[in-house]
Amino acid sequence: MSFWALFLIALGVSADAFAVALGKGLHMKRFNVRQAVVIAVVFGLFQALMPLLGWLLGTTFARAIADYDHWVAFGLLALVGGKMLWEAFSKHEDTDEDTDRLRIRELLVLAIATSIDALAVGITLAFLPVSIGWAVLLIGITTAVLSFVGVAVGRRVGARFGKPAEIAGGVVLILIGVQIVLEHTGVLG
Image (cartoon, rainbow, N blue to C red):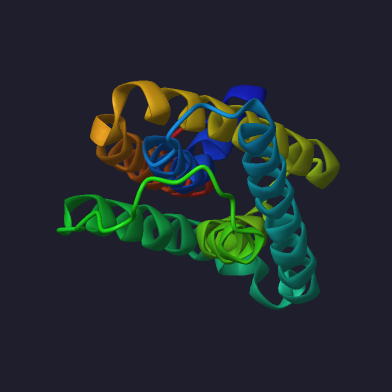
């Protein structure tokens, strides 16, 4: 798998964390660098650990489904991408109040919730020729950087970029799934 395909996957799975980070920034009374770093590190760590866990699960079952692993990869990426699109187009009402307080328990719940998709991507990575260490590092760093930027942008501009980020992330994951199927079936060389 090329660096660019892996980078697009990292961007795709980071979209939820970016959208949540935008929301956290939106509700800060003042931009707090320390809190933005904590949010970025926690989101990046969870986004890195979940694909690793998924990869470990996937490699356990890789031999049993080797003949149709590309369809499994496509299905998981399409499911995750479709879920992101569904959430982007669903009505969400903003009921959070503005605060300068960072609740660690809430942050951990958000980090787990936004990284569940990365678990499915990790299962997909088990069926692809990719270095899992490099993939996990790239996903974690990409998520951390985008989460920090999300908090900063959210504080300055508001929530108008959250929906487009989720839409772009969902479309990218679906397109990568299609590419995997086309490559494995010989349509693309």
